[in-house]
Image (cartoon, rainbow, N blue to C red):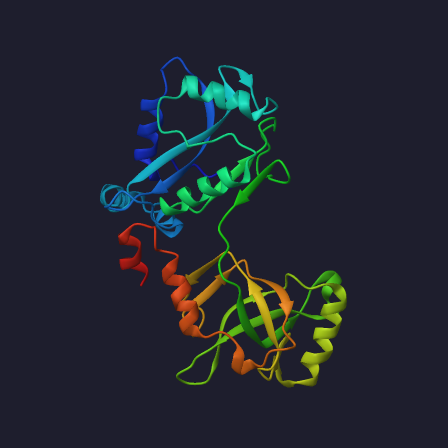
Length: 293
């Protein structure tokens, strides 16, 4: 968004200045990570707390210190490096920047990469960024040259309890699904997220017919249905959420399969979601668990 956040990150500014010589003019790319009292990474939500609170910066520097991991260089002393191969940019970066660099390996061996991923996760990081050694720098773009690699979280079997009509090409279908997990104590199905991703056009058509058959009411563009249809759902993360009665929300949920073979009583529970949520903090700073429990 091109917003200047310099005043929110004086500790990051200090690290950059200490890592560069005074005669160097460059543009670097990196990631600032919030660090807990035990030296391990904190979740991204902590990073966001540093922004828009410049008047409290002295307090925040103590509460949420930041550590910068630099991983690329785009410009150096008048020269645009964005079209140079990644391996050349990295070699130059290692020469000109004396601060903390993101750890890297160069390998095409799958077991080696898997081991590196496991190590990254046990250190409290989300995963890896894989880059072709000859790739140019493309801002905001990954594609086949840059890929994020993260460990997979267990899929969840969830129940559709409502659906919204789609937009554009999907306007004729009920294609945005409200996903719910079972509360074992009350027997209720509590929403944990929504998604319109994962189904083919044929499946959207089939799903729309089935949902209309079990419709129990409407409000606006939303059709409420009996909790009967189960779908297998993949997602990137589980977060605490005040917006849902369940208290949880799936991040980047997408449907992997429609489970016509399962009943709503076989759907996953809120307790399972809570277990997975807590497991996400296994390798994070202990400060994170204290805040987000």
